Image 1 (cartoon, rainbow, N blue to C red):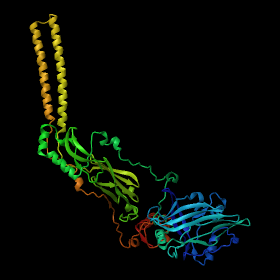
Image 2 (image 1 turned 45 degrees about the vertical axis):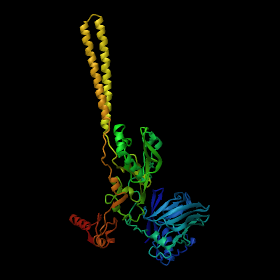
Image 3 (image 1 turned 90 degrees about the vertical axis):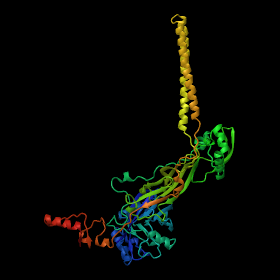
Image 4 (image 1 turned 135 degrees about the vertical axis):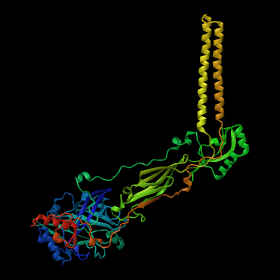
Length: 596
């Protein structure tokens, strides 16, 4: 019986096609394929295969037509091979440099064959291959896979392969000449021996063939099962999995959007000694008395004081001045920039030995879950289906003015997740009721405007009184009374303005406090090391479960070809002479399990 293998041809990270091909069974790997004389002119495959098996003294069995062989594109000479029933020819144009043929499954845990070069030779072409382990180690280097032709024959070489996994010998790859001989106007099919390719090392060869599974031709679901496109119209499903590139955001241009660039703010990064000096000046009795009676508190010059959990780049050193007049004799280092990007590291979920992988459905949702702990933000959940087999990188982008931070999670270099938090620990400096300050200032403006309107009305009233007295409409006594009334209104308005102005000025006097609320203090006392956490089930399979209960095999066979404990999903009983109740009983027994 032939040995069947599966190759997944992948180009630019997209599946091109799935190839099932057969290798003859041999008792030893380094078998000598017998020479079949072209004069015999075998015109059918069965007689050709029989001649090979007969000439090999039984060392080759299960000779098959389902080879993976190379041919020239569009050449009618190779049509003869297909006429004999040979399938799975790879034409020159279908083989591109960089293509990979994954053994059995397309993932990072299986070996693959990579095309490293191809050349036309005039009388054929050569495809050069590297056989690589899942870790990318070259097990076989620069292996030649070719075809050739001349006026007398067409030669096609099957893919070099290890013909016996159970008896590998020196792990040499084996191929042969599979030829159509044009002789005397008739075609003859023959082989003329074998070619071998030695591995780069035994360990690398063992690693390459470790996950090469022999498939059961009658059971396409055995082993890894079908991982190619299935169902519907294949032409409509053969889409690539390349996504658009999501561009990363650079840090803001501080000359355009930074707080310091506006000219209204300065960010200081003082040393501990500079902070001590600032505190001594702020809360010294002499200066406090001076500030309370003459100018504002020096603390009002600072918006906030806080600590960030990383080193801030230093700028120049500046003297702190109050209103550009009062020399405080305080010198503080400035911060060189406002925005920072910190790379927290990268982990490869495909190769990191700490990541548990069972290579089954349990590695994915809903069975497994993947989360990440982000300092200053907390625990967040990631899509394990999106992250499995890929790299995860974490970067923080931080604004030291507000302490706002955004954790960027990159999957294979693309920014997919963003989570926000705050890493600034506030330190009490002083506080004042800015809302009251703003409210009093508005009241002053309203009172001044009202007084101005009242004065205007009073002035206009005096003019109207004088005009009516001149026209003889009112007496002198009435005119004097009305002028006094207008003057009283103006006096009341001016008194309201003075009162409002005085109250406003009193409200502008800051209220000093030597304590304040501490916010975001957890940034200093929380864990600062990010990490991933994986939750996955631990599979528990009873001993000898397959022997006593069996696993689903999804094969279709005649019932007489099976033996042992058998459970049937569906059955077709054709030509059976039995009553309906007997047929129903047979169905029930087979579906519940019988021993054959």
